[in-house]
Length: 191
Length: 354
Image (cartoon, rainbow over all chains, first blue to last red; front, side, top):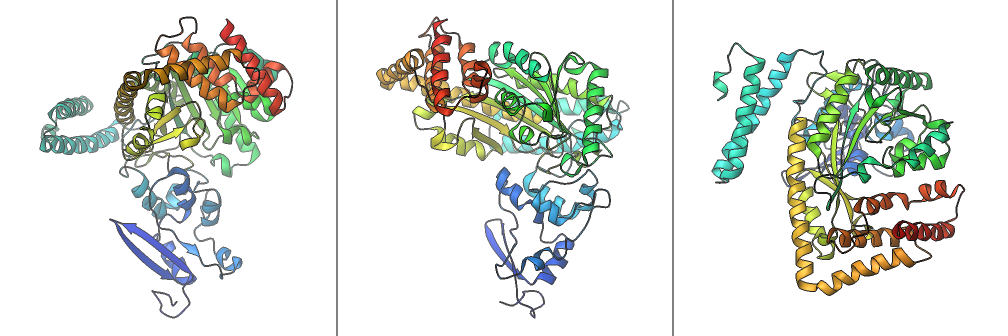
């Protein structure tokens, strides 16, 4: 089978991706796959084992064909973290673990892809170490307020009024919290 | 000297099993753990031995300075110095993970004397802070661990990103770094054949359910742990709230299943309870599997008020102390599997004769 992209070389990497119930297949030669991988297009290359471990749903599943030599697979480890030297190979051999905090920047493309699949949103809205700017916390609060407002609307639409009442109280509490963070006001549009 | 500390640990009751907690007839314990790392250091899987040591010392110093975990009067175990059986003891008491005790080099465990709080240093993340409490009380556990985390944060520079939150070795933990879980005893749902559908339903809510001792049909002791999966994009209190809501429903379902069993087939339920007690009280050879299943049956009997002389907390502790490392440590020597079965039976007889 020829590579879907360059249509010249033999395809040795086969990716199956399930999104919205549709299965998309992509067949690539090693060179084109590497290029796409560097662009973060293949996504989650390092987390295929983590997926199995944590049962985090369908992900891109690239796998080299049996007839490709081991040297070929290992030939280019791709991006390397400047802080700890972690690369794609280590990412895979360590079950999707990263080498250091800086790796989040280094591998941001594939991590972003993975987080989209396994987490709820891409923004931390929980607690922060005390030393950071509390206004940033307000930004996180706004996200939670928006989400809670949507949830409330959905509960009202489904006529689940008891749950909606709980959700409304939560929304009010969040708005109060935001006001307390910004005592001078400017949150009037949040209600 | 370290081994003496493990002996001291063994001699004291495990607070999360021995004390009373809300809904303890079904919820055995509540646990929250937070994953934290230090800015400027590689995660343990990429660290050099001297960096691991440095992190151990930094965290110990922070715990001592803040008085967290009752330090410096807390237990401090350098894992590589402990014999295997002692490490297994820490695992059986839920103070350490399997991964942690299997890779002891450069790791340290700090434990409060009542075992309610602990910090694994250099597990997958540099800090895995844990708080355990009896029964179903995730709110209280969150308050405790939040305060503990703040105390440590005052002395440590955590790796934190404005967008992604607390940076963890595995992206499945990034954000809050929080995993909250409740251990539940669900014999009613198992015996009425509803457990598979229940687990299926819970999985759809982005929560994980696993058997404590064995999965699926191989489950022993009817003990299950329900925990959150998502760590990014939710607040800690939101995670606790969502999980608590599901736990409350599970408790209601389990109670309904027990009533159903009593109404439809009282004789079978009583027979199960009675046989469980009989085996634990009178047998001379007891495998771990049989003991766990009988303890589950006995616990149902205690919950139903059939045994006034058996304390539920003693049964809780037996779930833990019938395991190999505890049996061997108490016997003072290494035991073969066959020997363990004999010692286990003797231990259960003596516990129920009290």
